[in-house]
Length: 363
Ligand SMILES: *Cc1c(COP(=O)(O)O)cnc(C)c1O
Image (cartoon, rainbow, N blue to C red):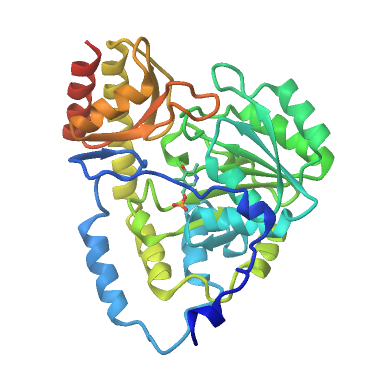
């Protein structure tokens, strides 16, 4: 066919999609990468060995277990829950998308409290769900009066919380989560608590799960479990939510390898918990070092720390760090985060390289 014959009007995507930007997280080739909150170490060697052996036994001509029952049972076991209370997907982002497909959509609204994880509002918009934004206080806390006003006027079907909150590191106090769940219940909204960093925090909203409460908690293998490459996340919640998510997700969306990886990882819980403890201790060391520099540091319950240089421009400090082969996350132009930067806790050596470079830039 000639190009002339093929020329015509290009099919138009949805109007709301045309107006939208994609999700960007710049990757730069540097020696020290502390920008995406990954684990600095790979998973335990024994896990890699066991997974390799298990992969050799996969029946490749067959579809994987559609219900992923083995995986759901293993995950449920981590939290004292049954497989019917767990929904697993390709990263917690696919869990969030499934929630928006089931409970959002045209004519419906979600509420987020900004600044928070950008994918909550992004995924909501991709599913044609309107986003209504509540503001946090200057120290990034949720103000309950603002929350009540926002939820009552928006009448959302989903209310997103994130604890510890990315990118601020703040852990939502239990009273706040309980109060927001009460407000949401009154208007018929589901509350989603994104706990991608839950293992680093002193408490979890998993403790509040109840078949009668419209509350779900999402978690991921990408950070604590050192398995960002596997793309696996999950939701724990009432069975009536799990049932709806099973309807919207594509059949056989979780491939055989992912299911095996997630199941085998659970058998290595002790190593994962030991690494979390090491990273929490290292976080204390990095925060103490930042406290001695001319920067403002926010307390963190996660594996990253948000800070703002007192006198220098955030963009400038970020590129000066790249010149010294250290990549961190530049939040300087994100709404509500004027001049802020976020560093992922890495190995001691990586963190020392970051601290030495930052000290040189700031002093
Ligand atoms: C990293 C992160 C996720 C993880 O997404 P995956 O799709 O599981 O890799 C989810 N929520 C928050 C807040 C995150 O920071």
